[in-house]
Image 1 (cartoon, rainbow, N blue to C red):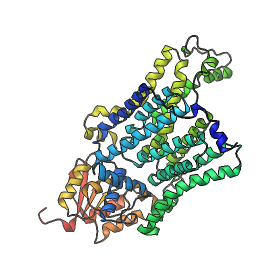
Image 2: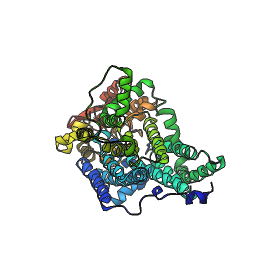
Image 3: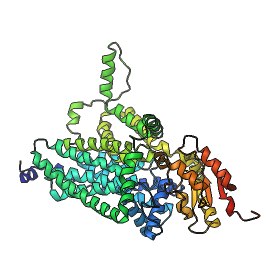
Image 4: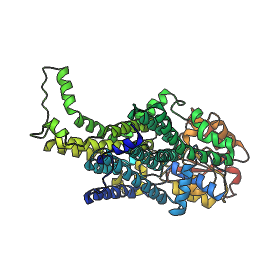
Length: 543
């Protein structure tokens, strides 16, 4: 079929409606405001290590006080630093500014989720998906309130999925395919795990139009690649100016050789997956509930097949007088292209959350957009088939499980919430610790925070004695332990060492490190349980 014939063969349902009822705009507005309302109580929660690391590297880069991928070393492409530089200019340099900017990205992603769901299902499903996304993307147990890279990366990924679906339905426009590729390239620049969208879109192109000649598939892939190459070329050129060796190591070879799911070992992966599953148990529970409601008939038939004599007493699931086959004709089920893209997107996002090997809870944020679309569609599909009691059960369990992680709000103040949320005192006390370091040191004086709390460097505005800021980097680099001990033993050792009581990733629980600290440093203060040590040679007499 020619391109013009495909275009003429389109139906009105291929597009977003030209007229969207006011009630649907209200749903979208409520969902957007809900996402903000759920975040506001967490705006004053202490800055997290990732936020502090991005902010520290960005400030040093834009002010010229450091070299990106040199002494300002973070294993990320430049995209997140450009975003933080923009936040500095537009909103400010504090935690609230970072998280408000992240909410803007989340709100725009919410609109993309809403639009995608309207294209593949019903307006009701889209409204429900928007509400689910508003809550799920804000979950505190997934660090949804933060300005992590996943918050910003999810926007171009969702736009790419929405745009690709529209491109498929409007005749595979070459320039629009390049635009989809551009979105994917931007997402990768923000968070490398977004690269999983490359096989997602390639598989979609091949699988959705299997009858097309191979050369057509190839042409579409080339135009898609043009968009991605545009971003990639800019990053590589900029990386060349920064120093090719350092840039390539930080953004590519380090991850492949030292920090990925393939480098940390099976036992670590399984333990980390277990911890992640526990933290995400409420979200997993919602998925399980929806699956049970969606496939309740199949489950009942399976049970009867396994035990023919069993006649389980089920609640009145089905609405009286409801005819399943007749009603399904009136339910706008997702089109085949949307179902395929959504499934590929879901699988890709799960792969993206796992390839890093760290299994941090905020990695699941990249799964929230496709998962919310599926949830909204599932609820809209199941709801008309349920009787009153079953509807109440579905509503209560879904809302209850989604709201459960917000229990931390009962603690009231940001400090109390931080103490309940985090396992060591480095986060709750970081502002006071940073203030102490600013007061007792001159600008440019190096410090070291053992072993993971990069936000203290940013808040104190003091450089780290070791360029690797995060626990997982210390675990991934074989020489890190000996490097740190050598730094403590050297004449150029940092003036202050802060312990957040984090044991570190070393086999001896960092005992050798702290033995060396005991030889060269003295405990000079403790702030809310956080010990601060000063180099003995720099302590003034009488102190």
